[in-house]
Length: 300
Image (cartoon, rainbow, N blue to C red):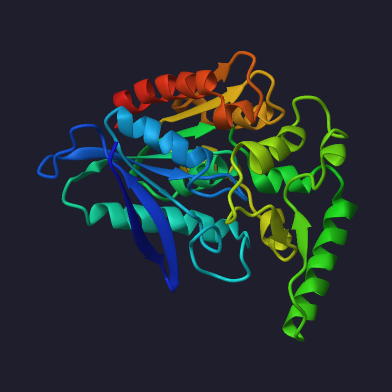
């Protein structure tokens, strides 16, 4: 499979990405394309990049990229998360694809993994150049961080305000752990938990020096105010297929989104899979790709 490293821009930020090409690629032909987005703290070389390669094998030109402030893309502080900017990254990726003569502009879809699935879902609500949306182990990061305790949310927002004041007055940014910092802490989370299993994936299975294992504290203010779900009944017009695992602690988010999507939504549950299993275990990845390739084949 042929791969090409490319750059494109989101305003003054330079985004680093890979284009993956189908077998026998012919630049004089027109191909359907997929924009692929990675989990928070992840980079294009990890799970999203592996899915991008698999979909290229199935006939798509795929564009996977490091989000603004992340991986090899520019922006400081490194690993900063602004969901609105992540959504705009997706539109900028589509802009870039439309400049390529071998892309069929009417056949562009979106695929997001974990929080990238939440951002892709959010993007689809206003980005109608996306003709169909697929997600794998999707997470609405704002929903996950808000929880049920309003007092805790407000306290966290006050802490973010204090952190911003410190930075404005010359302090270096503070960071929080995006994965469990030790094996012992990881084991304190429930069995099959995303937070229990992610440590192995990011530190042993697929470590990458550019991955955001620590996230700037100021990100939490932006995350708390984000929702990928609220406007689905009002603005979703494209078909949506969400893949999750029967043992994934994030399955409920996909179930909720599909319920909101009504007749546009479809859920596929991989039996026995946890959230992190869908990142790297070949049998579950192939299962997800098979279902989603059929979905995209019917819809773009």
